[in-house]
Image: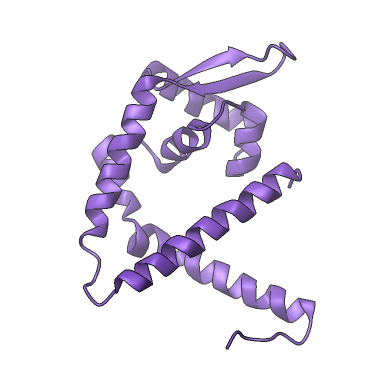
Length: 156
């Protein structure tokens, strides 16, 4: 039976508690981010940028907002990815002042390799996790990404 909250603040407090707990567990228990960083010789922020521009080009401002990194600090990250041939910077046709970051085939290949490494990590998960547990986690992650997509569309 799902938990019932007395009021909106109790619901938000429960969500806050769950988010903080998940943030502390994600980098080490779900995916070993430090291993990916070492294997691909790129910081997590570079991997995040590749993932964010995989489906569509994004502006420097959008990347700044999504990653919580100041615009002036995004530029060198994009420049490094560009120098590695993973992304390109292109001017928006609608507004030439806007620089869009677009993934290149080498960036797509890099993301495929990263996903393969994550998949390999998943094979080391405890056998105590059932297929049902893994399906539940997948559904929860899909819900999280859909929710974040809705927040992004509404400008948050």
